[in-house]
Image 1 (cartoon, rainbow, N blue to C red):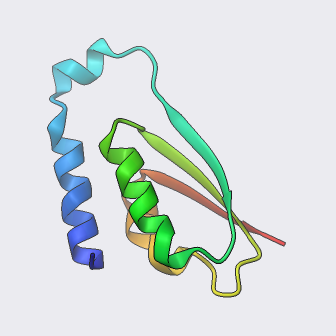
Image 2: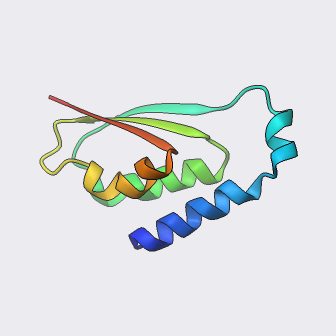
Length: 87
């Protein structure tokens, strides 16, 4: 998937639940994960979990050789993922 298709996919997710449905929900599911050197898998993993209803993903990048923000930026920018890098 390209960055553009990620953004399109996330837009579809945001529009999938109408405002009245969002107001009915009083709780949500979030994931907290630590990852290292997984740029080829992390985007697909995150998109899958967002698709099945996870509303927020917190990813802690544990000293990846190439920081995962490079592939996660579109989703971080959309607000679905919170990203932190640490050593």
